[in-house]
Image (cartoon, rainbow, N blue to C red):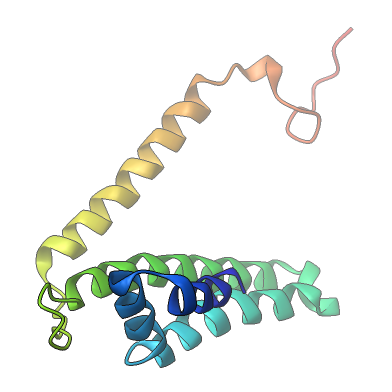
Amino acid sequence: MTWYGWMWWLGRFGSIEELRAANLFMGPYGAEITWNWTVIGLLIPLVLLLLPTGRGYGAQWLAFLGATWGSYAARIGIVIGGEAINRSGAGYYTFHLNFGELWYTGVSVLLFLGILAALLAAMPRDAQSAPFSTAKKV
């Protein structure tokens, strides 16, 4: 909902560049944003978790994958939007996904996982919280 409110605000009160971006995201890319961000990334995970079967690992994993895809689609949508607007204002460029953007995404995911693993490895074992620690201290 924040995204749609932001686009409405930019469309009414933004500068020329912001108006062009709002028109792009709510015009030619509106269907992709609605399906990938709103439906797959937000509504389906919420419905899966609110159903009575939402406590199962399968529903939680599907909700996790949907939310992950929605956040990745948001990132790639911003990249596409940034490359689609040309400086003269005479229309929009068409976007072609290239190897550099896929490489950057893969490296950023690996860096994130590496930093997460390093932080988990640096955490002292005796300072873990109760659900992770089974040994009783005297």
